[in-house]
Length: 460
Image: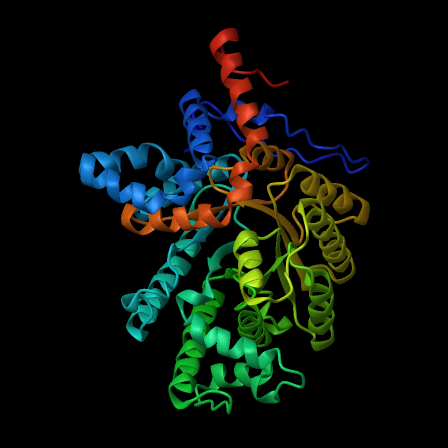
């Protein structure tokens, strides 16, 4: 947790006359306590160790058997849980958020739930309805954070669609959407009308059971969006695997058709675009243009992507073309192109187009801040930045102290809920965890300076 005692946040905006590149040299670590820095270094080193990530769930179970639930839980709370999770209760989450706000950072709450295809207990309608209740509570908690001290503009939460619908249905819809001349039965407008009216929807490519499940899915998504709109909370929908994404994009487009119109003051529903996929730049441009033609606000969370190894393995197994960029450099180039496209859209369409630059990459963040200045996009305008809680703090804190809008993705919940979720996210984000070497080195430098030089860095 970030220490804020004896530290006051002062928002300093760059000069309007010139752009000054931000220094991500760890200088902002003066805002954190020595204990926090030590824990961060140890946890990041552990998470960069492949066996721990690969066998995390088995190691957790072994730890509980060997040490007992109480001692095992205490160790987790003092390490991984304490580093990456806001807490279990609403009060713990508010305490975390208040500390973040004091540093110029804002919350992006994430409910740690998702479908587990091999678990019958976690794929049924009752499970999806329970997840719906958790999502609605997350909306309420996100809204209540507006009452805490500090800046309060846009409040966000993450929405994982496969917590509310089955991956089987998503794969079925994806196979249909990908067919040449796909039927207008699955147009976003038709799905949006079914959401709004509550009338039964029949799609010829689905059987009776699948149609019933689709109708229940649309109802759940609509209830979350309706509740979020009423509570002034914006929904950032997570991207997932390429076998699911066309269906997820269809459902997001239906939500956007209903909730991103100018009369609603949108965008209330944002989609996530993964730059490591070969078709992302083309699809992003097409979707931006479609939203503009339809008169809809357009919200985008731009990420590099988290499923690289799994996507390549599936493509090789199925004998299909690899959908991902060939290497990290190509992914970075794709991210840069998508970033330029979206910043240009923001500069042209203003409040009708919003962007979250969700990146831990320093060069991507520098590119975004420079282009914002060149295009005249204000620091408190439609562009914001996002990183994970407990990671990339040298970038997040530097951005926040410079006056940019920065969100930290914050999972919350009990150990039993969150630790498996964190392990799965770590397995998906191996490249991010293993690429945190620069942050580790900055942490070592700051700890070495404090232990050998003494005292906190004094900023002038």
